[in-house]
Amino acid sequence: MKVTRVLVANRGEIAVRIIRACQSLGIETVAAVSAADRESLAAKMANRVVCIGPPRSSDSYLKTGTLVAAAHGMGCDALHPGYGFLSERAELAQACVDNKITFIGPSADNITHMGDKLAARKIAAGCGVPTVPGSDHARNPREAEAQADKIGYPVLLKASAGGGGRGIKLVLNAAEMQTTFSTAAAEARAAFGNDTLYMERYVGNARHVEVQVLGDGYGNVIHLGERDCSLQRRHQKIVEEAPAYAVSQDVRAKICNAAAALARSIGYQNAGTVEFIFDNDTNEFYFLEMNTRIQVEHPVTEMITGVDLVAQQLRIARGEPLPFKQADIRFSGHAIECRVNAESPQHGFRPCPGRIARWQTPEGAGIRVDSHCYSGYFVPPFYDSLLAKLIVHGEDRSQATTRTKQALASFQVSGIDTGIPFLQTVIDDADYLNGKVNTRWLEKKLENYTAYHTA
Amino acid sequence: MELSEDDVLHILKLIDESKFDYFQLEVGELKITVSKGEPFPLASSPRSAAVSPPAAVEPPKPSPAAPPPAQQSAAARADARAAAEGLLPIVAPLLGTFYVAPEPGAPPFVQLGAAITEDTTVGLIEVMKVFNSVRSSVKGTVVEVVAQNGQFVEFGETLFLVKP
Image 1 (cartoon, rainbow over the protein chains, first blue to last red):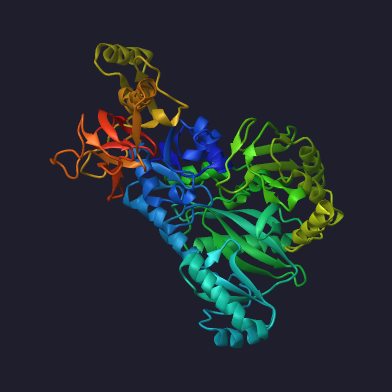
Image 2 (image 1 turned 30 degrees about the vertical axis):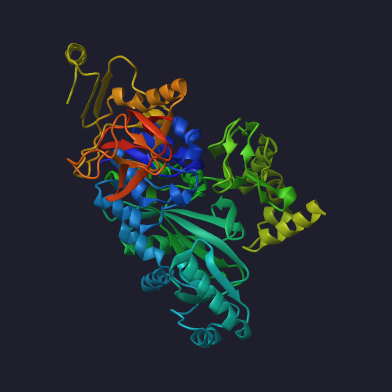
């Protein structure tokens, strides 16, 4: 499996991140860009650039055939899908195999196994990983009602083809089941082309804890500790940390071992993340889903382990065994990532594309910024609004939060609005500093912020 | 494989005396890249990205060989000519392999000097064995065929120049 020239089949900060990792290993890069991204930082940094289509991602970054043809045409022997877009489509991984291109990620089988969320639940349960009390495939509202009675309300109706926070509906009581079921099924059919639904008990006071895993082609699977990603808005993570500071050492070890066991059981190759929910009230943890790709928040794990995860992805893809064993992984200090989005907190967080007049990122001990932006860069309106990830490392959580506060204060962006002012109020919040949060906390914080700032 | 300085100088001399513009040797970890004339483009504009045409029949194998620089500027040169002479470009509506004819051996859809309208089919672009016809979208006379048969073209790359 040769990896000497990589087609970077993504955009934004992760394209830049992939190019940097390739450069560190002496691997050539070809940036696959839409017409809107010709002037992007990734395009400037890559050895070569190929324009794959018009701005709309459905005509460019989401076209499997075009990406494979681009890899061929540019003489690439490998393709990195990044996150989002086609990164978790087994179809792309398979098309790469069929065309003798090394897919930098897990096998098509790995992706298929974990992409069906109901099947993934069964695999997890099969290897002794706790899953949220719930149901099998619920075929109709009547069946769902009978199952929900056993699970206990409230329940979450989930689309088996969903994931990443998509295709989930809360059902508070039996009276709501009929309508919610029909809507959820219709939406799942429209969004994923598959209306298979199942249920899980709703855990109201939960934290989101996920585990980074790495597997090579020789059966070695290890974990690199966990992350707490409880601060979410509409199921999108905003602030992520490592380690999961609010969970006891003992439970964290159990969660991490469960994740590695699950990944091992499916012969997982490359980087992946196993997501869990942790019940604050009972201290139980449950498997949620597995993401078969590099994740946005991977840097917090890199900061406390010193492992370059994207470089490891490339090494694994070119057939190298993992250079370390589980016992070699050491954790040091605490890391926090804040996602800086192009949005206007003063105007109900509406997206805010446009030309960046001034872009000055913070610097200092323990500070890292992963971004594709620069002064004069035009943020196109076609894609997600992530501008930068501010990642801060400290000896402990207290130092990390203090440094994050300082870093946010010296992060200077003009020309467009960003979520920085809101992030500042989050990092300064007593509940946050004391770790008294759950997955619903940020939504409430946001409501208060919006009410106060738009009044 | 160990290479001495003398070996490298010898290679350079051989290439210098040859008619090759570009040479790349890769043996395991070792990699030598030599080019004559224009430096090989590193960070580049999309225009300079076109790569040597893949074989027309078989799906091309990924080749680490780099593109000959000559072809890279063909599209750029055509764009410059279009601007200078007021010509209209017909550009690739998608990325893929460009074909001038409906099948190997058949006459091309359009030739130099052909009069075309907006609806004239001027070529095919193949992506993963799916052939898409390329419509002219401009009216006039074909004054330059820029893209070669079987050439890999990126989205928006100039294929023909048309005099309106």
